[in-house]
Length: 581
Image (tube, rainbow, N blue to C red; front, side, top):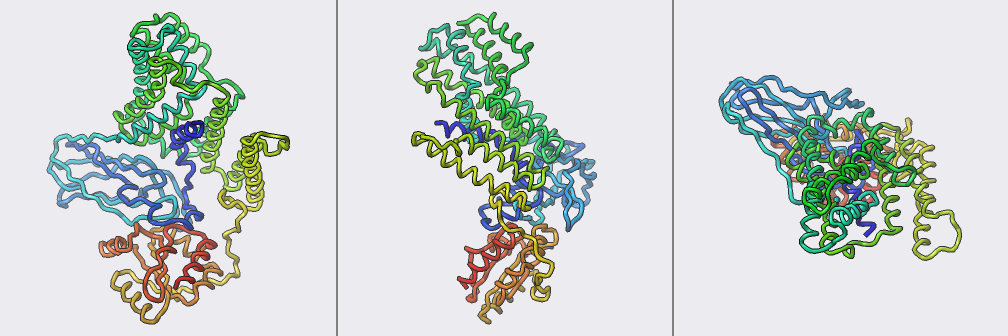
């Protein structure tokens, strides 16, 4: 039960830090395990919808899934037929991103609203072209979608929500109920609302009158965030250090409160006034139960502000007022469901309060500190982030008794063993940080830096093709010559392709292991229909990708690389391919 509750809270709070956990530059450590399942199809990664069409303007909305971003300079908008005139697209400023290959560019995370001025009242087809990338190191070719625009009359497109999302918010609210912040609502319900008379239809009706207004308060907050959150574009703004640092501080403060360093509650002036309202409210009536439900939601919300902030941030990315209200309404219902059980069947329905609640609080505190570090990782050097991760791991290890060499029962000995593992991991993180490493999954790994005197791959060793017919011809020649072939998918607009070309394919070990291969590079820069059909043929979303073909001309799919990869992991991949060709 404790693990389940912690997991639910973590799932709820995770969206608040998701953008902080992703680097703006693709991570080279992920490519070694990448495959097609790691990436979404382009139209799932970037969702385009028509928000509103009037006689004066057309409003479009792009929603980039977490971990994906769109390029500002790659947008194109045109009308069919061509004699329909459109004004210049009104694009907001994006997040500035400097790339060593492409210079200064602007990108968009999260929600992007685009407005197109319109003077022609005829119906037409709007052709929208856009391009984006995944943070993991995959660049999608330019994508084109066509939207039918009606004549000058106004059209507004509603948003949608899924039952699955509502169910997840209900479960998250259910998990929040079993925290020391929400459990004090039980005596309010049983002592004031029910006047100690638990059970039956009377208890159910009064408790429902108590829970529904409480959930309605959360719903109002969710609706406001869904309505105005898209304009604020909080997920995109979280890319700024001016927002990341305060949010990280926010999570750290709540973590300290979870550890019992101080008690977090509303200011005395506000809480005392709410207490007086609750005290004057008549118990045993539906109206009194409703008022107490509203007051209780105000008293409880500061305790759950960290998970609530994550939920609000998630809702803000939808731009859906109705969906946002429904999601937080379900969160409130989840928090109130156990209260309904208590009022209807008595306290026997709920687990007894005890020391396990302290473990829940501590676990939530650790998660919140992890989220704070994840946010700061976007603005801090990798070595500093690795130091902080090691510090957190060491703290948890010591809390679990890693250095307490006294007799303990079996359960605590198991916790101590895990604590010792965390302590050793913390030492590895600190050693790696002072050695110039930044990868928490490989804290003491070797640096990717290539020695200046290392041999480089000759440009002439690579044969570049850009049509399916040329590629088929080259593959046939390699099969006839009984030669293994390495196919590199490349594009000029693909940042990760440049990284792989410079830092991976020029590595001395990689060059040595690729001896005997025919090296072919397919240039998909133009991204025409013929090239995109070839992507579909090989079940690829875009570059970079590296494919190994044996001497028999058959691809060794199990060693295919999609996305960015570092030199060491790719050298291991080549070694595995050599065993299969």
